[in-house]
Length: 201
Image (cartoon, rainbow, N blue to C red):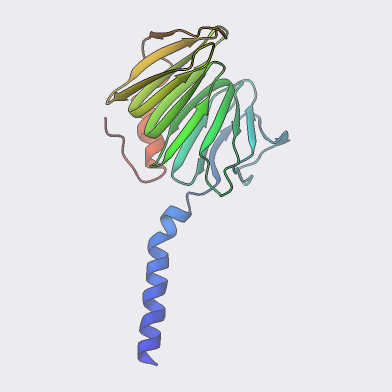
């Protein structure tokens, strides 16, 4: 009996050790203004999962967590999370607006109008503008695949903000250097803290 009780307590302690990680899954942490999930007005209790589309209104924003990844959508933004067959997201498409995200280990892709970004353990900011997509690799690794008549690949590693823009030229999208804008280190520190991490910057 004592041995059985010891094994039961050990198993419970092991499960409790995983509880902080499990508690990160699929939850809205902050919300301001109007936010829709699959065209339905969201509340702080609304779950967000792979396959969902999240949209924000004017003067609105939302911060949510899925697994080890934290997302912050700005005003007038639409993000479509691709269904990957499990409770985690490995691909997404930013249709409009801005996304600041901090991502755990594991490869993910983010589609924009003329390029696909491959990320792994990356802090990233993206903004869809009328004629270009602005993005900043705040830290970590990013692979850029531009679409058009020829698919081009560019690889970068950043320790503290490396910003670019990609033109929305469907035939020949151009990548050019840009400056850091519209996001801060304080925001990155805050988002990482929601999943018990610190940025490497």
